[in-house]
Structures are given as structure tokens and as C-alpha cells.
Image (cartoon, rainbow, N blue to C red; front, side):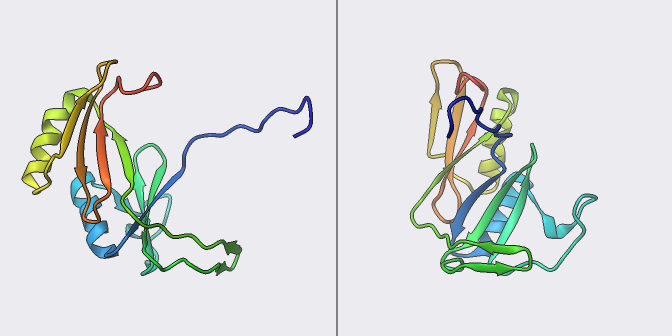
Length: 153
């Protein structure tokens, strides 16, 4: 970077990826627990199209995307009509946190329980936020966090 030039802006985090063993099972989990829709289901912004059996993008509120990739499917360069995507894959359990309203925390506890999802941990943070922790079908640690977790939230 040359002296005096300003760093270009970042507008936010657009995509987050998880690598899963059973794509259909994971898509069902995220749809049932969180109500996330696939882009293939169609919307005014994105007409329905044939799904790719190797991955599924899920719409998260706030103009964000959760990409569920079948493990081992993207270990070589993907060639698309518009260019290429370098290889990527992941192993092990990862962690994601979803922002929720503090007033909804008890409803989330009940919702998770009614869907057979066990809360593994709960933390009250020094700023007053509360986090509930549980796992998806692949063992990824998911968190529901209320405001007060971070200075920016």
C-alpha cells in the first residue's frame, strides 16, 4: 500500500460457510430451527432455479448468506461461466453466533426444546448479553446472543 492512500471500505460480512456431511439434513435443520430460506425457493430478488447438490445457500436476515457445503465437494477449482472459484473445504466443528432480541430468549429456549435441540451452555456476559449454545447435526457450535455481548452489539 502506498503512503497516503486510504484503505477501501468493507460493507459487512456477506457469506459464512459451514462444511457438512449430509447436506439435505443440514438444510432441513437450519430451515426448521431458524426459518432460513434457500434461494432456490425463489423470491422477488431471486427466481427459483435448480439446486446444486454440492451446496446450498441460505438467506439470513440482514442481507447475509449461510453457505452449507457438502464436505469434500470443492477440493478442486470450480469453473463457472463467469470465472473460477479456488478450492476450499473444512474439517472439524466450527462456531457461529446469531443475534437475537433479549425479549425472545425464553421463546428460543422453548423453541429449541420443542425441536429436540439441547442447550449445552448458557453465559451471561459482563455487558449484560446472554448466550445460549447448542449444536447442529454436524456438531458445529451455534450460539444465540442477545445485545450486550460485544461493545458493538
